[in-house]
Length: 116
Image 1 (cartoon, one colour):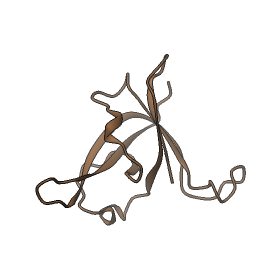
Image 2 (tube, one colour):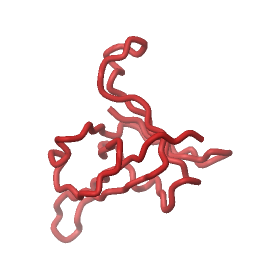
Image 3 (cartoon, one colour):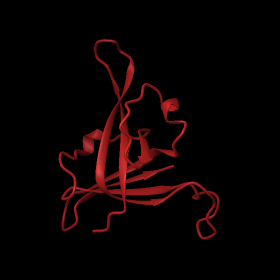
Image 4 (spheres, one colour):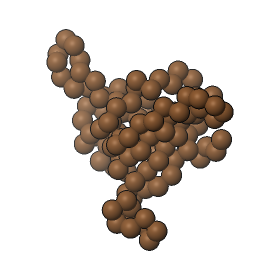
């Protein structure tokens, strides 16, 4: 199981009292982060900005697949600040989750997240 970065996920929830959107931050220390912004010769322009993130169950405490949803924000690296809007991350390269696979079987169990 390869790890190369810390990853921060901002999960959008609705506050029951205010009925407003809020972002809950999750930091994961041991993740595999591949891809990023820019054009790729092998992948072409269509898939050039794709990222794949694997978050290992064994290497991250309290991981829960329910803390991820399509449209949530992925940031490579550890972010300590909370946000109120996606625009609060304008100084970072951000990606939105486009796919979630819960690979919770066999060895190297992990959550595999795709983003753009």
